[in-house]
Image (cartoon, rainbow, N blue to C red):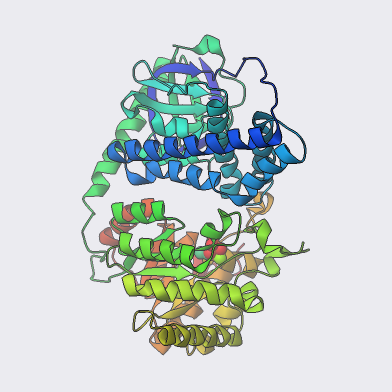
Length: 555
Ligand code: PEP
Ligand code: MG
């Protein structure tokens, strides 16, 4: 038996034969380079053909898979319309005298390296998409027929890496699991594997060799492990885990459509944290009672230029429509620190987490905020919306945002645009200052939402990005819990609702604490909604303090 460890990218376990896939690289003769006009014409023709292929693939996939899986082809089509990408290829042809194939290869390399160098793991993962769509162009230019990857029978597919379009086109009935030498946890392949419910392990390195083809193997997508020729004991363990997981999944389904109420009658709303339209679908699928945190910055992060009002409006309207009448809390742009895009042109900072981020950027570049608020208020006519502001540290920041919001609403009314009558405006409590001032802030905010991730980082002066200090980054630290309590008490005094939307909300050992504080809602990743509802329905809200808060002074 060989045990190989990588990174778990999609949970679940599986057992079956390994199918090692090696993509054929182009080995044909180089083509003579024509004049720049001829090369440009070939480029445009290839773009048209790629666009038609991607539209067809979208239609085919959407009819036999769910829409979020097919979306990858839409994203690729958008990439082919990206002005920066097109200009890069055209310049390489006209100014550097390259043939179109070489120009596409070079542009693909530059763009994929740019994505890989970005801070956000999500953006890094887009590198695979730009390579994928460029490969499509190259196939067309070289007249190669693109053969979909066909699987002989149900297998564990092993590859160096899979292009997202390859993953989407795989016959799911013949796919037990995916293991790759490269790839990342945030790649589209990983996202698609999760959506399809197929276990996946990435970054195994160059260890799956062609000699392993056809060998029996087992995969644990949570632990990130692949066993080749596993022992009987490992097979038994994997089978037991598979059965447990399936049993657990089935068991949780009983909580769909049931109220989130404790045995002693305390209700709490269980909402979902989302960052995309796919996540909104997952929220509905997992029976979330609404969206408690829509991280709107992801739309900005995945664009190569700053999205305009129309694009934002379309996204917000679709999200509200997908949630079908359930409330969606949109958080305004939280750019800065670990989340940045080159077009913002943010200067390098010594301490980005304490710098020009979130509401600070929006108040400094007021047009950013105005555009986003215009899109949000216009979309508010299509569902139940709330808006919340990240990184509030002072009362005046909330007052300034409200002034801008009012001016935007007046402007839209003068234009005759339809907007909802009331869109509550809330403050995120994720700095110690906001928690300490929550009594005053409650007069300016229609609701609070506690962001425990940043609240922990700023309270404990412990960088949330730095894995080396994870021992010191403790969201259950008594100081953090005391700030949460203070916020909940001030919200109750002022009669405004309070939600917890940071990662701590999904910690089932903390549900008792949050409910005893009287929080109105908990917002968690979609997959945590049903486990949390189970926890709530089986508990009684006990009196007394949870152990963590009592442990004041303990590390
Ligand atoms: C938080 O800080 O807890 C939060 C929910 O916001 P984010 O994780 O997006 O910073
Ligand atoms: Mg935050």
